[in-house]
Length: 265
Image 1: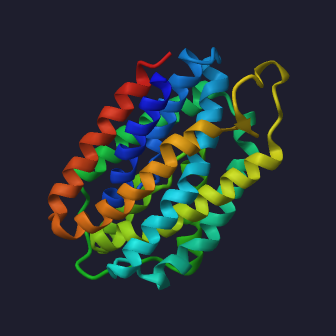
Image 2 (image 1 turned 45 degrees about the vertical axis):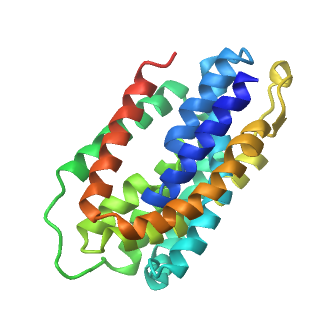
Image 3 (image 1 turned 30 degrees about the vertical axis):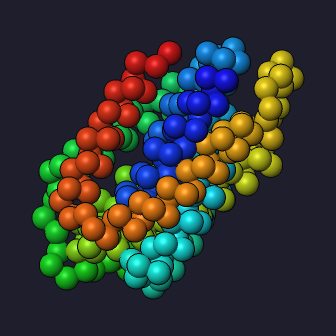
């Protein structure tokens, strides 16, 4: 029963984060699901981490879809910019989906921790931004998108910690960057989780917990579905919060998550 309470409370928190910060919720979901699989179901850290990432990627598909609808009606999405990034993001996301299970989990965890701390630093100490929004050529934009898509799939997140700082450094307002990222998160979640599903190698010893491929089904039911209500609410709250407060809160959250993952065994 305690597992359900953890999933429900995490879902509420994640839904709020998705709407406010444009992240797919993976930065919270991955540590929480890893903890549950280790402590409740007896998985090793290596098995739990990969399954938590797979579950997070599947969850992102649902939460990002709601965020897209809300951000679209709030006029926070520039579809021209989305289309400029989309091909590269798709390629990078599919590639990591097929490679994820083959990578060492210590490497994945190290990347996850460094990823959150560096992203937090860049948000708290931003580079000089362009006054006019500019993006590089279509080829370079897709090269960047492929790299961001690959790295996001590697740690099971929607890419907000990469795309949002990058876009704001190019002169795009943060609320618009968050809206654009919600679209790119959907591509990352769907492409990576689909590729991982078809490439997944089952572990016959560890099939006692409810799984669909590598996805932990109770997390989708008790975490993701409740979070969708709060995605809509927090997307509307975004319109009432100043940009600096959003950025600062986002950065502190990343630091906290990085530290939690560092001490998880």
